[in-house]
Length: 64
Image (spheres, rainbow, N blue to C red):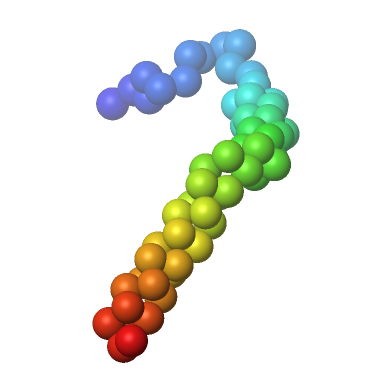
């Protein structure tokens, strides 16, 4: 049975390594840009603060 995954003759084994390295080099930049934007994270923090304030207000009204 023949191996049809790699063409015979001019197969460049470094080609896939180079593409992988290019992918790895690009990936941290995308994560760093997403982490520094802070948009969703700020919204989540504000939502938690508002929820805690509402729960505290309801508890204060119930106990007074």
